[in-house]
Image (tube, rainbow, N blue to C red; front, side, top):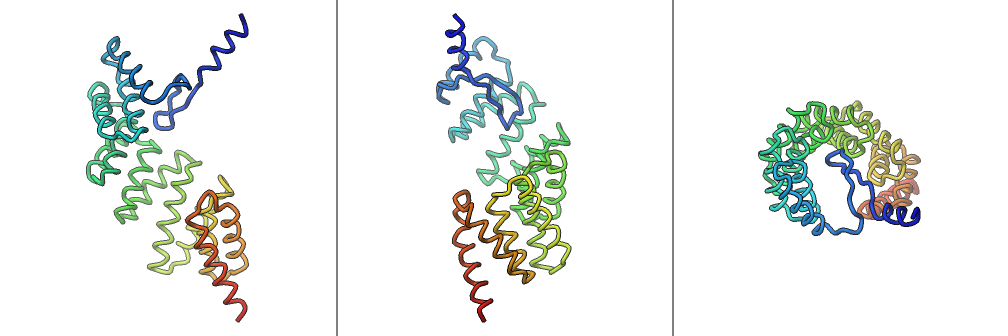
Length: 246
């Protein structure tokens, strides 16, 4: 009897949705289509359950069916206007469609409902960064990493902002802050290829070629995680070595 109970339990997995931050039980042998079918049937019994509409939308979005996802997220919000994750995911879809104003509107609504939301602040900051509004981007990204201190992509975007500012104004403070955020990434993930490559660039800018070579070589070591940095790292290493031979 114990063996059969164990077997049944192994057919179920406890999963955590990053988007919702909620635990749900899902059958690990079900496809997304099967989960959607099951959830739609459950709506016949509980037609006013916002979370079920959200789950269906999430699975459609995961499959790449954004139009379907949008319908269910909007239905979710019509039932519960306080559903922050639905606002954020709708914003992500509009961002993907390059509907910047609509995306920003949805992200801001999420932030209004949950002012300390790391997801909302991060998405707003990233959207502002993509539209070159770096000052506002920095404000929201700082709020995001203050709430979620392990948010690697937030630190990466902050370093990008200060690198851009350094390239324009040549202020050493921006170089210092860019390095600070990149080192924070490596503290969280010491094999992050983008952080390794960009630290190499920073040291090369400062003519600290030993440290530059060290970080470029580390980038190559972990280039399987970031293949696009491999060619650039090789070029930078070759360029430095040629310069040092002169």
